[in-house]
Length: 477
Image (cartoon, rainbow, N blue to C red; front, side, top):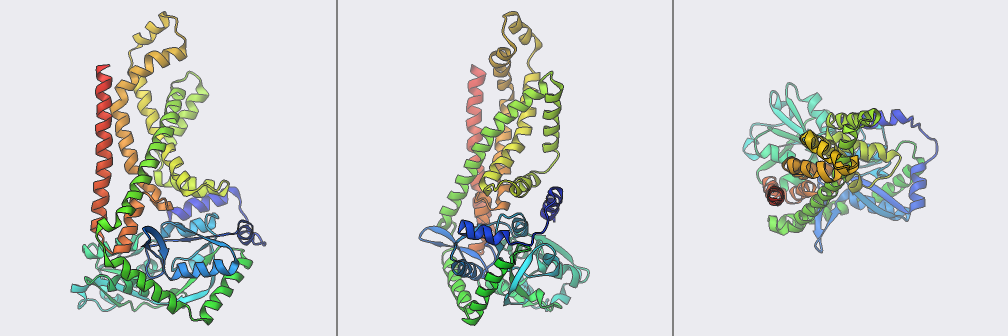
């Protein structure tokens, strides 16, 4: 919902209008690359497995995407992100199409187009095996707690057809299973093939029939496409017709099943150490760059706010107050999706920019407080020595201020490491993103969380010790 509001507002603000041409197809043809968005936590549609030490996307939807790209004679590029971000990415041109087990519901058709249906499944409910005798279908969940993926058809079905129930939206399929197993909810509404995939790899949960009143759109799956893309839609439908004629869907599902078995053959966290190592690498990289950029911009903003120039003061104050008054997640979405309408920023670049811009506002206030804490006598003494204003700040004020604000700056840097985890929602493979991938691959909910917690603690504790070391140096200087 938040994604849609932000993007709808942005689109309205710049006055984008429908076009009768097919700019998406022309872009694909010109670049020779088809960019497909997906959320690889929805087996057997799309998930990840390890091949030759590398994480790769697999599943029925991935095979269909490969077939479409091959038939169009272009290269395939997969962009992974949260399910809730996919349609926004499609509307803002970040991806050319979406294959994510998506139902062509009337609500979605208002904002995007859909191909012909390529798979018809159904809707089921997952319950804990010990409760299998209690629940029979949706009518058994009256006055119970039910969960479904945020923004999905299943969420709306639970909301509208399970009377007097409490429905919770959760983004990731693995988090839904974790909520069920820890008794946070009594049932999870999920598409039947995915529910069966989870149940077949977890003896603690069982699939029961949903019993929902379904339209043809509610039980079908199609490719989401940008509006006004007739050429692209024609190519996709041609490939889907070929897939249907050659009966490739059962082949794709069988292949997905083999990957699922290989994923669950060894679910130890040690087996997935490369995933966590990559996540740590990206988290550290994002944090270092964001700290560097945030410190420079924060210092500049602090000096502008302390300036006698009213315009500089006003600009700096407005920036700081606005950034501190809006959530980092919204700022991240604006940078990636909003600015993406004008500049095609990669997800990693957008994530670093958003985190750095946010950090700068807080760093600015820390530095301003540090400068204000310096006794006026220091300024008067430096003036009596004939130092210019810039030299007073450079050689007298800032060195003393830095000593005073070092602990506060350290806290901001430590917080930044943890807050950088928000970039996972746009598909940046930081530690949180990798944690969710391991959860999806292994069907283990708690163990990956514990590993991520330990790794975050090691990072922040090490940084804390390093900052204290330099704090001691300052105190003895």
